[in-house]
Image 1 (tube, rainbow, N blue to C red):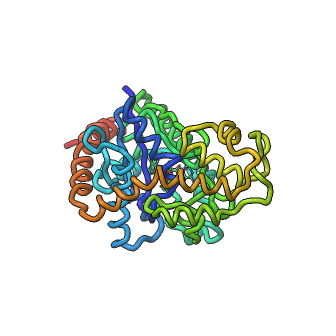
Image 2 (cartoon, rainbow, N blue to C red):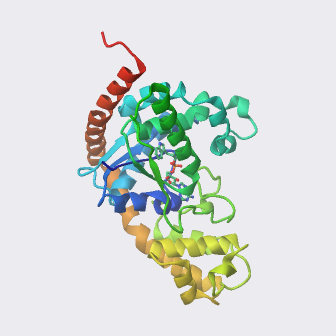
Length: 332
Ligand code: TYM
């Protein structure tokens, strides 16, 4: 059976990278798969969070998923801390994964920065929890942006190592699903850096709750180079900011880069940016408005999360029980 699992951290605003790289694909995949989407609050606390802000962000991210078109009745939306099986399996996987594997994780290196000794143990073990998220539901497919690819390779290594250590064919080897032009949306201020929630400049990203004026202003101020847009895709090489804006346009309009350059090749950025801003407002405006509506009265979102957690528990608990038997834990 095919089952999707994916997650998003409640650490600040959802942005265009989250939407184009992940969430809009999650919406589409609901047609073909049984889907479980998780707001990963346990992952969020690998970096210090203000408790009040964490609670608010958890609701806001859940509202974002629902506003974007995820159906919490047909599928599952929940917050990770409510299903204890995730953390339990993560401990078991900590005893399967090897230090050498974790030492290779580039995201830890980036997030820990120079002061590695001061990073939390949780930040280091983060990918092990991610493997547990996926495998505690025996998910087979994981739609993510490009930046999560290495973590998914580790998930497959952990599944293989567990199966082989205990001589079982228990965990599936989940397939990453990384789609199209917007698998890596870059910062609007620097086309070589990923668009991210943690960037100090709000002008680096378009938030899903930004209003039309903010979206237009951020696109107008986006860094570009002095040349007009090329007519061929090859002309985007070594022009990271231009390439990023064309990628975003293509992803938002469901067209290819070649198609977009067919229309805008030779145009000045001022013209292209105006069209891009209109398009972004057209796509994101209704989602942002619905998010605001859902967070104003959180009772709907809270009920969806409660119900989702209950159904997620019903899937994960029996799987974890089987793991206990495989590992050799006594059930007295
Ligand atoms: P997070 O919260 O950083 O991002 C959520 C999703 O958005 C994608 N994404 C992007 N895609 C394209 N361009 C960008 N600039 C961009 N920024 C973010 C991410 O690739 C991701 O798909 N570790 C995960 C959360 C997680 C998870 C899991 C994912 C926890 N457990 C299990 C899958 C399965 C993370 O921090 O995502």
